[in-house]
Image (tube, rainbow, N blue to C red; front, side, top):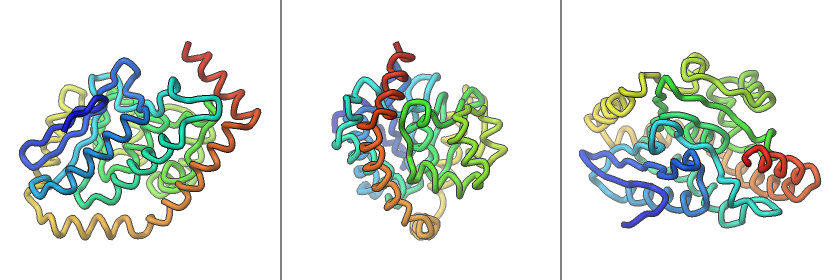
Length: 251
């Protein structure tokens, strides 16, 4: 299986998906999401794989959300919306735990990717947060409703309403990540967690993951409505104004 935007490797019962677009801080485009989905499907169907790791290449960024270079006048394409939702859905529905190795900036859509993962281990250099209201976008599905389950209503509203960035230690204190380690130790620590998981009953973990997800599976409906709402918003005067200003800042 050949990929362009990601690196995919399998070894010792572990599948690693690495977003490989360091020049744009591992921002995803449609192809990136499509390849992530194919890798997740492959990991799910491989009986030898017991755990999946999602990481960004390099040491600067985990993922910084959608690549604005792909956004058109009315926002991202319908194909992008489809694969974006599919990626979220697959991270939750594959029967193997997915661990986010947050190696740097996790902003916007990249922040939501790590939120949806079953576990998150962050480098001490990581910075996390939302940026939607700054750039005329939002995620009213897992990015908001599920986030509130993790950090509480007040903190989730703060994260979205103020668009601040948080250090890895601050993320740990609010329950947004499971552990923080020095960047040089990130891959080793993730490997330790993976090994512990592979030594446990895969059937028990499969049922446990389904049980944890059962109470929040309805958020997928919010996710679908949010995608439609964002598309409508990007076509509005307000949406265009924020989108244009975000592109100007990027330049």
